[in-house]
Length: 147
Image 1: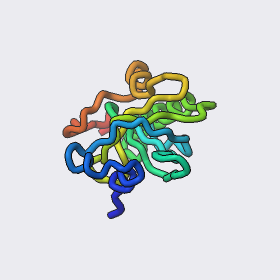
Image 2: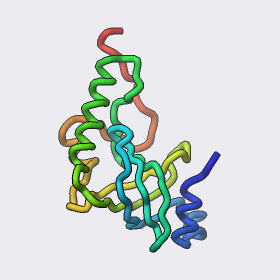
Image 3: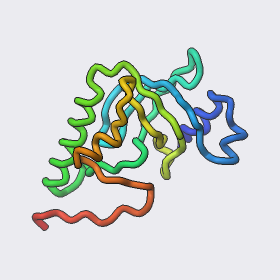
């Protein structure tokens, strides 16, 4: 499987630090290409001048409802979270990624995200009740009201 974090680390020239802590402090500048869901973005990250790579970023500290849930209520909540994130980033030219690490599947990276206007999307989405706090542990089971 393609491992994004080691490549990002190579761009930053911090491979020895990777072995010690599996994390890049950042900041790394990025432009948002697309909102995937309420807690994931596709970005064009620029870890080094004139070096850009597309990478999926899971926003650290939150978990959004799943877009592909079988439950209509969960899908609706997921759509609301994604739309809120889309509104939040509308007109935002860039973001900054910090505390970057691989997520548990290495299909994306995990990072703190700060918008160029200073806002923290994780904090704002949590404050609006659209996502729940998440520390990377086991997720509690979610039940559907109709089941």
